[in-house]
Amino acid sequence: MADAKTLTVPEGATGALVFADGSAVFGRGFGAVGDAVGELCFNTSITGYQEIMTDPSYAGQIINFTFPHIGNVGTNADDVEADAPHALGCIVRQDVTAPSNFRNVMPFDQWMKDNGRIGLAGVDTRALTRMIREKGAPNVVIAHDPTGRFDIVALAAKAAAWPGLEGMDLAIAVTGAQRPWAHGVWKLGFGYGLNEAGAERPHVVALDYGAKHNIFRNLVKAGARVTVLPATATYEQVMEQKPDGVFLSNGPGDPAATGAYAVPVIAALLTENIPIFGICLGHQMLALATGAKTIKMHQGHRGANHPVKRLSDGQVEITSMNHGFAVDADSLPGNVRATHVSLFDGSNCGIELTDKNAFSVQYHPEASPGPQDSFYLFQRFVEGLKGPVPA
Image (cartoon, rainbow, N blue to C red; front, side):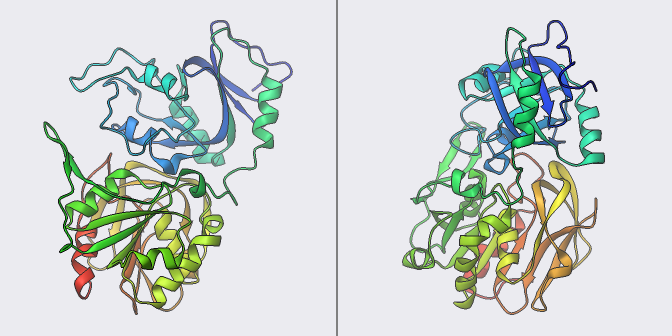
């Protein structure tokens, strides 16, 4: 691509994706006007764009959707995984069309605008995906200006100056306040069922590092009573809730950075033999608490079609994933064994402690969007709170 100083904005372009080296991709902007800097990643899901955009794990990231028909079913108030979108923006192949779904409340482009998120359409998203696979996830700026005026030099400098996700604690920015969780899973025609869990149910304290709401709903479905605490909750604050078990949620950013305050709490809970179940960032937090290490991935795993092998019996689960860091399997201590492995690249996707009631997975068993092959993990956790964890 041309140097930023000589780059010409094509006629009719109202959106741009600018790289730190000054190269750029142009298209048609939609949603909010302005620019945002972050890490470019790709997601291969063919459904659930609203859930993906509101997943707190995407904080600091711009999503390149490989599926071309993003926005065709519109948006609604039910298909969200947090109180607000956390992805900075998105890139799509085709223009957002008029919604065609009986559940639609607002067109996707208007929803993006109302939520201050920038979109870029008319781009070869498959070419961007191949570039990320070959070169890794780059730092970029996504920009939208209806007049088509872009200062490419300034935007490239902005992308170059952004430090990247390594070393960045984003859980602190997306965590929620302490609250009891009050809803079960969503059903068409019924909405979200109320959490009727009484004191007789096992009490799970969920540490919110940037959790998707459907995780809490699935804990309720599995039979738990759930109280959510913020990522910064201390060991004492957790124990004040008298938990039967502790859940470690997904979330964004570098696990080593979040671990500076989260790992000592988890390590103390392990010392007290509190049962623990972790997902995604929570999986990485549990691994760090045992003395293992995490690493930044080349391109990450993001999509709803990731095959994972369960090592205990060879069963393959099709899973939903969203992570750019992974547990270094070679760093696992002697009392921790790997339980799941990615069939895409062999990376670690699950661990369990051999001397504690604690386990975790790298993927998202709550899906939303995605397959539901792994709901058994919620059942395993909740059923094991009153006794040994089932094999």
